[in-house]
Figure 1 (tube, one colour):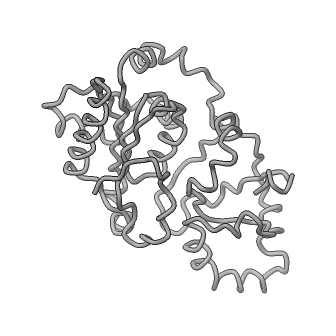
Figure 2 (figure 1 turned 90 degrees about the vertical axis):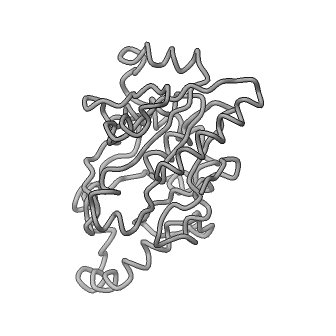
Length: 265
């Protein structure tokens, strides 16, 4: 929207962890993002231009606005609003600015210096980055209530499907597992010839970009997972995604997954 208007983009990072969501540290400063951080004064001026009156009015509309902006809304691209709050994760918002996003959502540090061996494996094999999201989906009651958990059945179906798709091309996949609960992954996939990548010392931005460097992706119902697959620049990539994403907003998430990604129940 800022690009369409020819305006500067500023980010409000004070919103992180509000409304009982799992707290996340701000991490976009690891990327070549050109947006600036808005000051507290700038945020208040835009959100509440008429002081307490507009603050009170916004209180009654906040929940509606947040739900409204989860899915794709064409009118959002023409909005005159100065403060936008939501996920805006539908691929329909992203495709027209893919080149710009690929440039900006790239790490400032060259990961090939740190993970050169892993990247070489990705390139030499028919690599599949398999992402398992557990964490707050399992441990936070509010998050668990809102989100489905991709279980073993989902991953078994996804693994079988991507094997079929690659075998049709006479290719054999090699799976690289990323997870915020890597011990669970090792225990439940110990009979598989997988490479378990994630380690405590990995930085989240590094892990996201590493997953995007595999040739194919199996993702979970997670924004982190979504972005790793969307940033994958392999023109022949196969992406397997869960058919159901969220318990509460099934309709609003209908435009989240690109049409050429394969869905598994």
